[in-house]
View 1 (cartoon, rainbow over the protein chains, first blue to last red):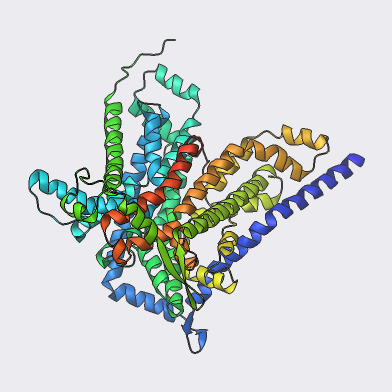
View 2 (cartoon, chains in turn yellow, red; view 1 turned 30 degrees about the vertical axis):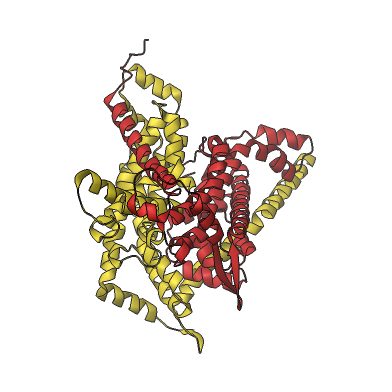
Length: 303
Length: 294
């Protein structure tokens, strides 16, 4: 009887403790996640005027969004650029990060040095990396090409034809850090017994990577892939760091557009941007679930 | 059974090694070129873009340091913010936000991982997973709107409050850490009369201290390097990254040359490089997370 009473008191104390430590973050979450998104929905159904303040807009902002999508060529450009960015990020960036992580995990030659080298761009501010990279590609490389091959050319970022590949290269080149950190962390948790047993059977490094390493870190890989779907609508391709608000529209992605407009606009433009955001979210949510479902259904099994 | 011996040099290793060496070269070449450029005067840079400086000068450093300031509007007055002040704002912004986010994430993942018998713990876990899966796009105007409404806009402490968040991948890292720790420690402490707060602070947090330090440093670097959030939420309190972004687009005649702009970059890299050299083992240590399923 007394033990049951003690147990009940312990449970009550634990629950009160749980509430005490989680209350502030949950309130913050309620305001700055739930509240912000509810406000975003409300904002999307309003107009703002400096004279009269907010007024109900019905579906006015959404009608404008659909009108812009149908008639403004910029949206088509942004869709193409955002999809190219996503495909390169996943196809090249994540694939190379996986291979580099495997190289480090297997402690191949100079693995420790490469681990630091690959992480280095992540600790330097993107704006600094971008400035160094920008002046190098705009000044040093054209001069080098001119000296070596007598080729006269302006900077790589000056023309749209070369700017996009350079920006995509930069995104992959400077973005390995967090992926390497997480992938090597997951690989280090693979049981030595599994690897040793496969090595006894004479498995090659490539087969070990494909048939053992990747299936065993699949949950971490899926997490990265699922989170990266939102990147279609949020990845700025570092355009703001390279060009500020002055990037040529042929390079714009959805992520750049949203940040650019929010940083440039004043209050009357916010409701329209909120409507754009809601529409993008409505597209991104099912897409994310689809990617997750596909990866879980057709992905390798740890068994 | 005998392990079959394989050649230590495989084509896979060679290709990977070559790729990584090429990567390292492309990474260090612009940095070395940048460092070399900082010792050239603008006149020399125009004629000699690639070579070593013929007349070594530190003038770019003095010019950058004297012109590294921003004029910002606070209320009705225009305030000049020197580089040293930007440095202070960076420390306050990055340090405060990193601490707020890391402590919150650590506490919430502890609550979720160590008390699975309560529904609240499960709710916290599902909030994180759902928010990771559900991509909310374009909430920036609404967030600006809310921060202005709550009086947090253009205040460093306002951003600290906005960063008391437990969402994101690092929750899963802490969660995996706390779930892996045995319950015996807690039970022993409870028998000795320790309360839940003491068990959390004196037993479990020290066991997760390496994960905590790694994530704290990662957040610190992330916030230190971030210029877009201060640009929007702290227009009157420019941080170093915000300052460098502004110098990059500056119309100031003294800053309108490549060597001075690169010098400004090199100066601002130094503190974070020192931090990296001291803590690189901790920063790129073993951090792992699980998937999105419990």
